[in-house]
Length: 91
Image (cartoon, rainbow, N blue to C red; front, side, top):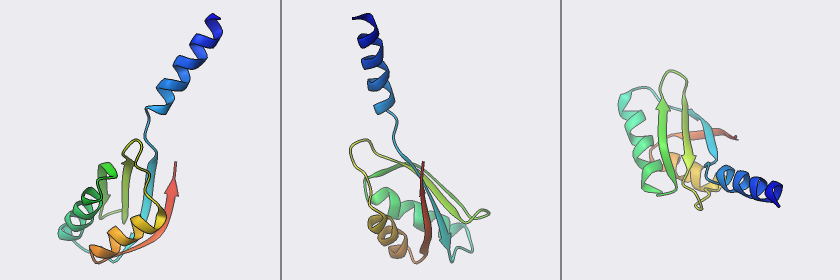
């Protein structure tokens, strides 16, 4: 009985973690690019803890729990900002 309680508690705590998404982005050249991508991802209301790096040409964020973003939604948000999502990695 105690083991099942521990396993249940562990499963519940693991489900609290949001999926981390890393996107390779092409076309970024300045800080305004970073701001535009950050805004569009935030506006989806499915991304949080957004970090866009001009140096690495990547956008990294966590999906809001219960609001998974499809690759198509990610590509659309980044395209709306004026850039291209080249590759999407989920962790």
